[in-house]
Image 1: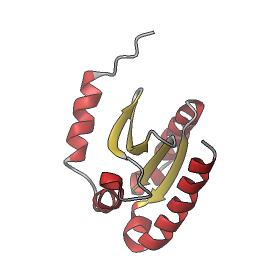
Image 2: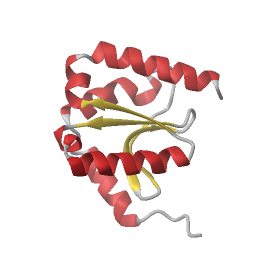
Image 3: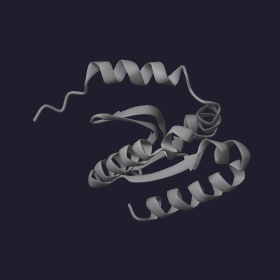
Length: 123
């Protein structure tokens, strides 16, 4: 099996880092440079055929920030398929709505802290 990543996917991921939503930008300011629980996060990280918003290899955590396009039938189906695929790799996936990240940041971070603490304990 060829484990090489699709170069086009890598280019697209890089371009997405420069066109982040307000919610992604805010979350990155919180997660970058080991600012959150001393965990190293990557943004717009390629895992197989998917690009995830944020990824922490150390605890196997994927964080997805969702806008309104994820609330359509197609969006829900795609997200469910993607989540199933990533979970099959042993990853934990958490999703937050963009408006939650922007409007209820403290609640989102409290939840994220709980998830990260549990994952660190179970390593």
